[in-house]
Length: 445
Image 1: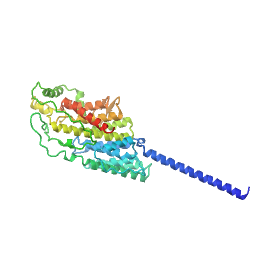
Image 2: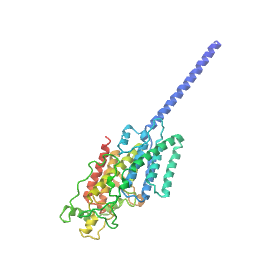
Image 3: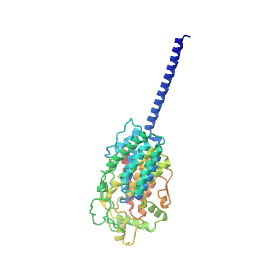
Image 4: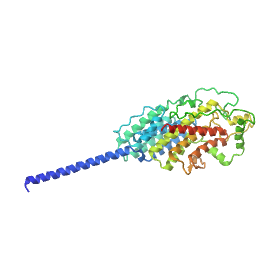
């Protein structure tokens, strides 16, 4: 073989090696790109651990918060859930993304760029930290430090497997989402909910109830903007049973049901009333946030489904309370304790738990609980059994249910056994809450 032939063979061999390396490099590059795209577009590949940790902290923040009414925590629940959900939008499916269009007036969300590689747990972490700082500005120093500590600890955990740039890009997106959601929340009308209000007077109308005789709470809460447009359509109730002091009248008999039940209340009924008192505790919205956290854990739900459940359950609770308070202050119906003492003549009669400082009809516990229970049923189905451990830390025995629907029903009925609601206020309140959830899901189909 000539020298020229040997050289030609050598160069062909070199070119083959170079071409092979280039092909392998291109293949690996494509695979890496495909891996990134696959991960970017499937939030469902992540566990809900990051949201579980933030739910735990938010429940702590709610417990320790001051100056917020019980029902007021529905806003914290709803807007925080939406911040979590929206922080994940770049990687959600087209079906999941449809929910973003349903938030009533939300604008200013950051643009999602295909060129950005998001690490979704970091998106959520930053969004939850920012939105909780905004919603709990008066938290004590220890709780404020807990927000910072959790955010930092999770960030350090993420940096073990992800680059600084990826985490920073993700965190910035989460912060921008939280800023937009909080700005939106500030325009929902809650600031005017306790504007000056003259309590109507007359037969059968609500008046401040003993022992505190507190002024009416948030009389204009029903004017708040809903989270989902159309959620309260056709949810207002007809007028309650006509007021009467005649012992043979339907109204008198309705009140007598409450009194008669109070004379034979069982230990379990008392335990039910105390369990759903929710104050002191985590508030009524907070109780359902705790239930949601337990459901997510039991179902091993992924990050996308957990965030959607967080947003929709909070929205349903919030919007159910809006329509409920519209009903309350439209009819201003007298509470049982007032009628039983002043009309029936049992001047020393009292309730098992304190009567909230707002009118009787409809039951807020029933409305919000039915709404939340129906969201969970739609998203997770009906469990064979579910045991609620929300108040284990208060040494209350956990309560077990055969369905989410049953949880909502018990929450409503607990107010009858507590002596603070008539049965129609509860049954119609449950119906009201269910209509809200039905409207919310109707909006997305």
